[in-house]
Length: 287
Ligand SMILES: NC(=O)c1ccc[n+]([C@@H]2O[C@H](COP(=O)([O-])OP(=O)(O)OC[C@H]3O[C@@H](n4cnc5c(N)ncnc54)[C@H](OP(=O)(O)O)[C@@H]3O)[C@@H](O)[C@H]2O)c1
Image (cartoon, rainbow, N blue to C red):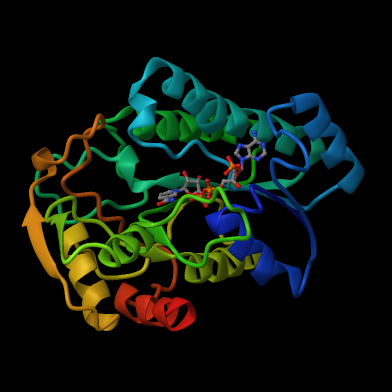
């Protein structure tokens, strides 16, 4: 299969490239190749390659920066307008489109056990709103024949790509802070699922090769936890002596509100392994 990956030096894109390149003709692009926002050039590239599948991992992921006017403008361009353009191109050039979204499309303000694929989004921050608007763009094109896989995921962690600008994950940040601090704080709220990018890339590849009914899918490692619980597991597995203090969401000075509960439930595909097992594998690589 001919596959184009956009955002291929990012956290997830780099893992998708690794997994898919073994068996498919993969064309990977990131910022240094061309700006995906140049729609005319993007179309030209896709006309030349004639892919069967385009996987878009490009996004504006700075959750707090999205609350500012400038940040939100960028978020709309990357998280809403880009998927809209890709959806139009998918119909015009006849390829399948895979796109990623987030647990932050759900409000999760009250204790909510989990969110199913077809639950109605109701974001409470601008990042979630911009990602939801991207979802809407794909749905809008469904009656026009768009074949798409919208994959929601949450709290990514995993090997950083060779991109020096790649955003460090929560676990990376905690490990780094632990080298210079004896005591750390972590929010003991905001329940959701950590997801290991090599696992997500593998599960995405299986989905996109098998091609069940198009639509929304949830792919996350199993085992919802708070940031505090995740950090406790991290330091236990890393055998790192550290005093970890639980705090509330409100104790952190952040611009964007976060859902208290945004656990995605995967009801359509084989479940991914518990995040603790994935974290063990990750620590084996980096420690
Ligand atoms: N990270 C998470 O915890 C998380 C959680 C839930 C859902 N998701 C979703 O999962 C997907 C993948 O996230 P990720 O963390 O792997 O993202 P990422 O690491 O930021 O990767 C995105 C890649 O796209 C590139 N890019 C940005 N603008 C571009 C442009 N105009 N032209 C070409 N390339 C451009 C980025 O380059 P630069 O780095 O140089 O900008 C980066 O290499 C996204 O849809 C995200 O919303 C992520």
